[in-house]
Amino acid sequence: MTGSHTGAICHQLSDPSSRCRVGVDEYHRELVARLRGLLGDELIGVYAGGSFALGDFDSHLSDLDVAAVGAAQVDQTTKQAIVEALRHESLPCPARGLEFVLYAEPVLRTATTEPGFELNLNSGTRMSFRVDYEPGEERHWFAIDRAILAAHGKPLLGPRAGELFPPISRCPLLDVVAAAVEWHRENQVVGSDAVLNACRALRFAAEGVWSSKTASATWALERHEESRLVARALAARQRQEPLSSLDVRRFLEDVELRVREAAARSAA
Picture 1 (tube, one colour):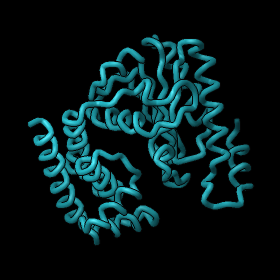
Picture 2 (tube, rainbow, N blue to C red; picture 1 turned 60 degrees about the vertical axis):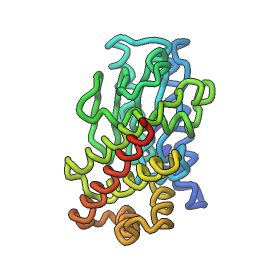
Picture 3 (cartoon, rainbow, N blue to C red; picture 1 turned 90 degrees about the vertical axis):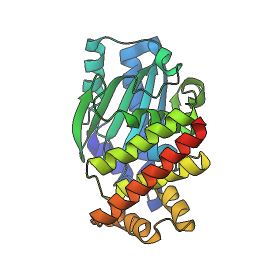
């Protein structure tokens, strides 16, 4: 599949709400085909997660989150071959970029909050190229992504996502969610995504529900949670406008505290 072919498909769509859905479906099919070519029968399943699975995909703003599950660990040569096969220069992504993670099924069975991945790849026209073969500082995202996959993952190959991604216990998962909010705050990540991710964290702490950034912000607005800042964040996400860093940091501090309090109640 070529980038021009994907663009042509997207251009042909008359319904703006489709957001390049046909191009994404083709992209997913080709991605699965390339993984099957490299992993063969060792490939158990491939799943779409993130905004695509949560019904909030926007080709201009969203990544395509894909997780694959293999029967066992793979060697370095195979990992590098996967990177070369899936990176944007080889398989153009019809979104902001691809966030791909490969897991070994025995690790998933433990329902750990540890990153636990074999390979982590970020590649796209609007994201920095990144390859990780072992966890770095940003360890929290992987357990959160797997929890969302367990509840909402869309199978591209294999059984339903919940069969391979078991639920993670609430208390340790809340600790990881709080760590994600803390990461935004400590690293001065104070844009709209930080606010919307915090809304998602707050809703999960309150209701145990995973929802998209837009749905989480709507939930927060309905409960008058920093309504002015959340409404501004929704608008800023579309227009790429800055927010008050002071207001964002205060909101993140409050959300982090409330998530940690929820974790403490869950542990009691």
